[in-house]
Length: 548
Ligand code: HEM
Image 1 (cartoon, rainbow, N blue to C red):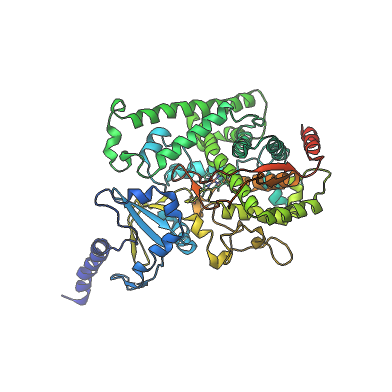
Image 2: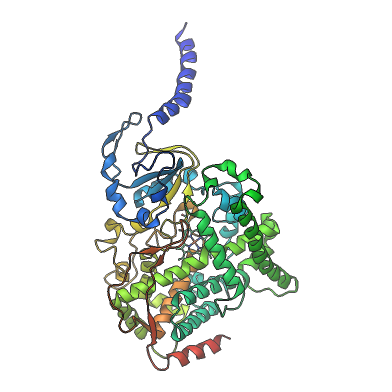
């Protein structure tokens, strides 16, 4: 045999071995990232369903050293992960908690082709929402179509829409306008807080009211008993329950999805609520379509989507859910951040004093602030960043899933693993945010001249709360704008205090939650809002009249 014929025989064999045998052998010698062992068969249900346990920075120490300097047979690299990854298994389903910005970027951004999927969640995706929620759409063609809706900037720039785009543009000092609808809602929130101490309720109504006007150009919602608001609150709570690890056995035994509904209450309920939620979403968008047909063209996400529907080939129900889903994605997240921010103000009174000094100097006492003031309010803008960084609103973001087997620094990450970026740990990394990273301190985002500075290279937001890479939150500008005008208006009008006689240290650590993917609220606390000056209420009402 000539050298050439040898080569012709050997080369395909080598190719076959490296393509087929090596991955198999690698699987056999795979090292899963470290983590608690759990019980035989069921695995670690207990820890996986305990969000506070998972989110605790202590886990980084608990599972840090166990894999130090581990020799990987196939890559010949020395691995030193120092608690950056923690792996749990529940009925064989792998869950990977990512505890560092370095690893989160490596996996969720640099390997986004593998880590941009969402978990399957049979009960939630297939029955409760019939795969119609955008945030839980699997990564693929359908996702690309739905995503393009956001890409084309369907959030309108004017009127009820994303005032923050104007704020961002106004940074260039070329586009100085305010957004009446957002300012009106911030003023209404301030007036409501003056009258009652049900802060959490007011924050929720306010945040949902904003999304309703962005989505459908609806007027502000006056009461938390509004049927649309009640419907969304219930939907979000149901969704959170379904998404809790261990909530439904069908997630671990997928054959259970074929059990007839009459024998499976979970399935019957999910199917019932899917119809109810569709009946809530659809009329809202139909009303926008009817208005457009009558020539009433008000700026809203829904109107823009309807006008562009020829480009997307989405069914009527799909469109209604795509728009309606913004209520779930954007309402609770924003109101929960407001709730944490309030707690932070009470725990750090000096921050409130500094913000109010800035407002007094820039805005004065004769009128409430507008979007046009925000470029001149660096402390308030820094406070938006700090509130988003510090609040564990979405402590694990929205879970991702891996769509292929992967190896990372000697560790094996099986296909289908659910990935939780541990935002509370990542946003507190001392190397980035300093040794006082656990403290609420907006000044960390200001330079020595008091200007907003970049603390994370290439990331203008300055935190990771909106997630990573291809699935980063498309509502982040909306959220930033809402928080900016809200903080400015509320602190201009009100001083937040603990009621007389309130004792003890405020609990800024406890995370009250209903499930993974749900928002983490602070433990209940009392607060009162006191007008800062006698004319505040009158001036707010006058400003409101100006916008009407
Ligand atoms: C404080 C407010 C908010 C926070 C903390 C937040 C956080 C997040 C996070 C962590 C994700 C997952 C990103 C990832 O997988 O890497 C996400 C996704 C998403 N957010 Fe937000 N969000 C907020 C406000 C909003 C608003 C106001 C809207 C809409 C108006 C919105 C719409 C969405 C949607 C549609 C997704 C799914 C994106 C996808 O799967 O591709 N969010 N958000």
